[in-house]
Length: 464
Image (cartoon, rainbow, N blue to C red; front, side, top):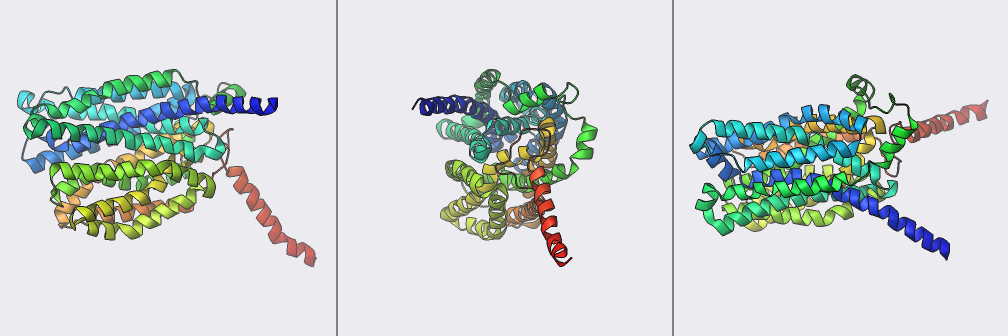
């Protein structure tokens, strides 16, 4: 009986740090996506307040500014990633969250174009670049932090809460912007109301800083640091990273093309699409995507747990093939009224959930401990900067050139095809330990290949 009580106490003690790690990781993602939520849902007001020109021109400028922040993310990944592998995950994550939140706060304090002219959009661009630079170290570090704390057999379930924080932050920002719009009215929102949601970023950053500063660094990182000599665990130089780990860098980059094109089209661009192309009202075009996001949040932990049982690759195949097949029918359905738009969004969101739920478990496992933060941050952010953050602007431009409202569907299908090619070469790592200096799953794959080769030689030996 005493053994049972002792085991129960040990389980409770181990669950405590894991839950705190989940909260500390998710709050950073929530802060990052809170910024995207208020920017995407306040795009009409921001463009009118800070940019010159007609409504269409100002909107395109605002979308381009949204994309600019993503172009800086690779530089952030190159800077923060190796730093996180040398100094530890928690120190870098504490810095990135406070920089992100302060940049978002300052956007809400910018003078308007009417007050200071071109200095207004210039200052916005500068703040978006700072935000993008800090974000370049945020997601890779948060996913690494979460994955290295989680038990091997529950990494998908635990990691899904990081993406829960993604949608929670985006939804909070969107609801705040929508709530202010409903309560204050159009005139007040254009005059000053759009600024209010940006001011909430400061307390979010302080909460995140507190949670992260109270955590120890991950057990996996501490073990690597203690077991190796100083020069061994001081991270991997960038030249060595690209020389020895180019395959997982390319594989992860390909997966991120699919992940983030779908992500930014469904989350960031959809309010603009529904208003401009489907002719919906301001509030309705904001509300329908939010309903879809809240439904996705409920399903994320279940999809993460499913990836622990059947594998990351299987849930990704389900998602990629499903979106490829359903994209055109669902976007066609969206043009047939409110009910059609809601059903189309719900189906695509449901098919996207398996990808989103499993990335925090899948992506960090593609690199060894000493190169995990840098490898993930660099590959993720380069691919995101080119294909993810630019997706709203490119989609909007292509619709304008072609006149087709099915452009987002074709764009998503192309991205899923790229992701499928990359997925063919990815090693399944479900249940694999992240400890050690080898890529998780590499020994298992090598061992199975040796066994296969031995079985192929058996008939020759029998014949001899």
